[in-house]
Figure 1 (cartoon, rainbow, N blue to C red):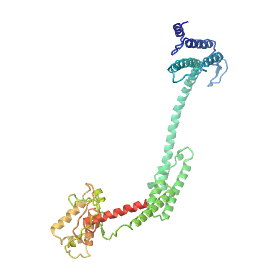
Figure 2: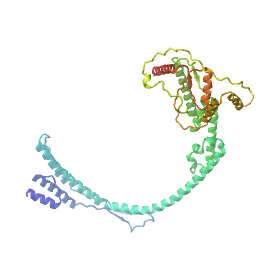
Figure 3: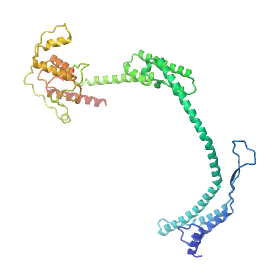
Length: 435
């Protein structure tokens, strides 16, 4: 037969010869396919599953009778044929440098893949046929089983609902007992923080769960008393940590860490103090503890940052010699204040000695101190031509009245700026040495 005739023959028999060009390859593919087909015509695939009806079966039992499937194939002949084909490639060493060899590799590879595909497709067909009765058998079993499980699931839902109601009732009783037994402790440690999920199981009983609950409350109370007796430096922080974790060990460890950190900070400050200048020229602004916090009104003194990035790297300029010492501004002489009378009466007596314009300024400052915060707080610098330490303290108390805090530094603006720059440089040096 010619190649075209072989192709038509293969097409009529449903044999795949795609990619095969030579007559011998096409003929070999046809022979292999026909050998497999002829052998499978004699195969016997017998798998039957049927319910036994002629034997007594207990109600609700599944009785099955089946015959094991028997599969036979011409594996010997097929393997001998495949070995013969493989033998033809034994001495052939195609070269990747030869275009003709590469072309032949593609052709023969397609032929070999076609042969492997035929074997694999036949295997799948036999497997599907073999499993068909098993699949049908499983489907019938699952269908009947699901009918039973549907009813079981519906009954299980009822059981779950009843169990949830039981747990809710038990939890309510335990919660009520806890609040009664713990007393004020319950306000700090809620029930959910101390509860054990296993208490809601059917075991332990409610009474046993109450006993375990009381033991946990007693332990928390005992640990709290122990914590009080330790005289910790940071007791308040340790107490908060204890009630967050209910762990005495964690609370004491936390307090110890805070104490250690505080000691490190104090040591660092002591080391930094070796490089800092004496601070006897600084006068703190004393603020009242209960004074409202309000920013300085806009339009006052212009803010000035003595250490901008540009100034920080600019070489220090010598401080100009002071032409003449500043004279402190004399304060008005108030009338003597007697010890009798309320604070308001004493204030009224002093204010009466001031002119009305100054009294008006004090009144406006008091009104401003009562206004809510509605502006952003910014740093400001107050330039005072001259004042005594006592006058600075008096100014500080008035500043504290409106919620302003800070520190007076002696000297003109340029002197203070230079001194602050030197202090910051010394601090950076200390940190660098510490690193």
